[in-house]
Image (cartoon, rainbow over all chains, first blue to last red):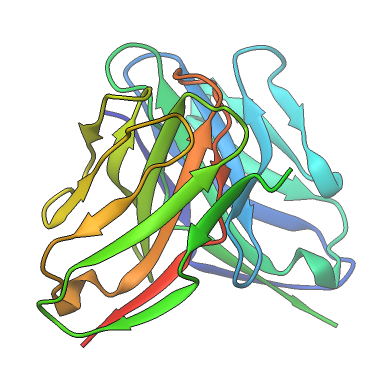
Length: 114
Length: 114
């Protein structure tokens, strides 16, 4: 079975600082990996996804993530945080074969200070 | 295009009552899903449907039932609500079934069972 672990339920950064949200996955076969964002009182929306093409994936709003097989990681980064980035971020993993439906991590709340 | 709509937006329900959460999508997506979101637990899959006429159980199906009579609608029913079903419920859809598919989420239904 696949799983994801998001390190840190809360991450706090200053506006303009680097954003780093950590995600490690467990999968017995090559995974597909996703980052979703949830703004307050809204549903989730896709930020970016890795589907075995380029290991560095660029998403919306200046976010990107790098698939590192050796580290089983898919960390999300953004060079400069904006106040509007304050939200809940979810990492998810899925795989071919068996159940295709992604498994979500527990989420990381990003807090951006002025 | 509205995407996914959910109703009601929020509800307070007495324990033991029956409740149906509605979900409608206008994207002609084949697959639909129901998740519950609880603080610290992330999203957990309740039920899913790969295509109209078929349904399957997710991680936490007990106490819930679904039907998929047509492509657009995927209602979730709580036969006899209990306080542990207090949660935020999200409906989602994807164009196809498959591990690389993006899920599109509705705005959620906030349910309080007393």
